[in-house]
Length: 374
Image 1 (tube, rainbow, N blue to C red):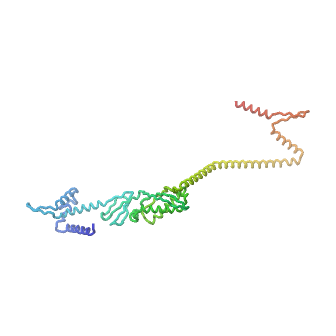
Image 2 (cartoon, rainbow, N blue to C red):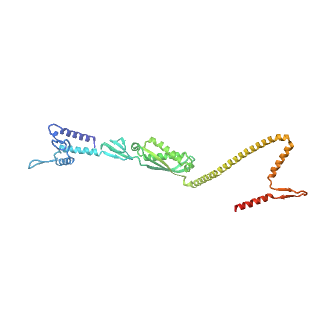
């Protein structure tokens, strides 16, 4: 609809309105619904109003004159009918301007085709034919993937597959800044992955360094996407696959198996270490305690012997012969006291009689124990 047409329509409606209020035409006694001298202080019943409007619209162009005759066909519609139609059009125009935005969506409003604002969830109104709105889902997670053969830092070739999950974070940027934001994020992810893989070695990519490479790729992808203002937000990056080419896969499988065997042997050694070392440490601690106890006992005994000899020294100096004999007898008493054999010297003969008292004593003790057990 052109601007000239809108202007002409506005001028026509204004002329009709001014004519309605001219003095002398009896308009002050009328209302838009065709009532004269309405003293009710308000519009009539809605159903009655609709019936009257329809009657005026349907009969406004056909009026008869006299009995005979002639009729005028095609006369213009009455002013009240036209005014009623205008009111209905305005009401319909206002009602059809309401729209609803869901909780997970955002509404981008365009005024005459240009961006105006972004509205949140709920009920909103727009002037039709002036404002338009576009619903944008900001909660749904979309995904894409990139893969290819890439060269590592140690000059090996590896096949890598990476998954990228994203959602719309800024509806305005998503709709107007880029022609194809999805293609942009895919190309940026591939570029970031190639850079990270190019700075890593083959073993880390295939085995233990996957999480580090995934995190580095995510950070580099976010940094790369920021200047483009695509309106997309990267939520997660998953490292799906990292394998060598099929021509050298067998060799890499052997290397991986050897590395796994190495780790298994290391874990076995650590397990044995955890079992043996505590026992050895406990034995060493026990021996240290025994040695300390022996040390204290030996020191105490030595100090006791010193004190004993210091006490005997004055006696020895006073009576050396008596003291020497007493010491000899005490020593022999201690020595023979630990011997269970008994020797008897027989007068007038060269033979000595041996009595096995130790065996007799042991035998008697064993017999006593047996009788007690019964």
